[in-house]
Image (spheres, rainbow, N blue to C red):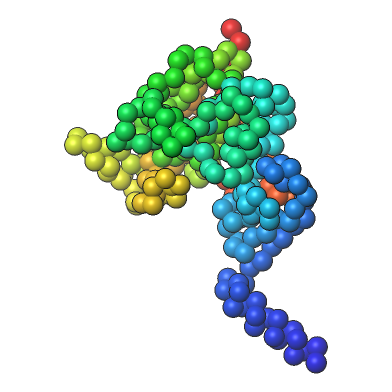
Length: 257
């Protein structure tokens, strides 16, 4: 009888989980501040290791852990988040920070206007005043910009003295040099230099083209174009549901003087 149930269980599992992969861990989600179960049915944990309550994924929880460790007063600060999610860390910022500004990129609309609750901003040429924000948040955005030198410079410009850009970006090249993945041609059309690659985009079903494959030398790139120092944090803590490839959180700080 026991063998029958084992075989039946294995059969049902093979239907529900074609990959045969299942991983779960009880822990605490710092995006929804609850005791939850983290669950993944895919072995690529970065995009699939969900919180059972708020559906946050590891990079969101890692970012939130860094924010709450180094900026415990974040609820009283002025925060700008570019291209936020509608869940996880983004939802927490939106809910608990009265001075939170969310922006998206609508290239066919006037920049600086508010569209569907989002400030329309080109990250490479923002309409915000100098020294506007205490914190700027970007989550997996900077592998999609055409001119990252301009984007980092603009983020630095809009930070107040003592402010910080806290962000995630997949450092897929790790110790190898960063590679440019796509550019605009002379007619302004996207031209891939490598195999075409797209990531999901919450406001565009076509997805966002990948323009950069960053490595750890991103810190040198930021220093070159902004003069600011960047720290890279790698967090692996299953108690917070934080385990995945390319799980780094970066902080670029603007000095007080």
